[in-house]
Length: 143
Length: 56
Image (cartoon, rainbow over all chains, first blue to last red; front, top):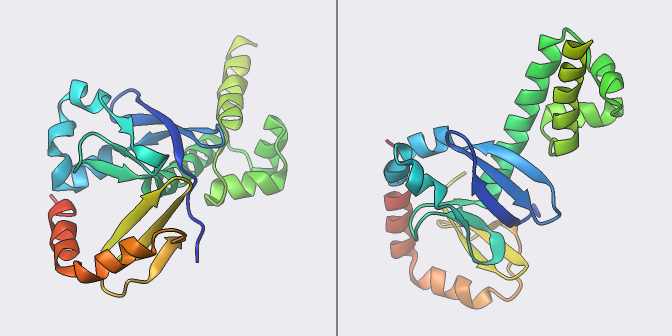
């Protein structure tokens, strides 16, 4: 039996149809839910109404985020999306820099094994790694 | 993921498949009572699943 995703401590709406999610342990993920909202009919009221989307809240006990009794996304779904999107984001970043996984891991001071985990989507991409990759870009531009 | 529902509480949740009542994720802990309710209300769970998971 799978232990599954951790529960949620906080959520707020970010740009477009993204959510800034804080997990129970304090880790933060940006999760794009645009496709999820587009896929299920029940979420129709949130697609074009920014104010309605911003009224997102963490459900009781932290096992979902919700906008109403019917409009909710489970922490399991958000966790899966966070893993998938974090992995895709990091891979895209690395490929844009034409680096191997080993080179990218070295550049950001991450162990090669952890880098593989992040790109495989088996470990949540930490905020520190996401910001470090953005920081490396900023440093390169300034040089 | 097949049709399912969640039983939630402080510090635990169980993701349960509707047709088999098999716990797919998490654990039941103090939720046995909820599972008994679910077994008696399977038709409601099926119709709610269809309503909430209708694709666009």
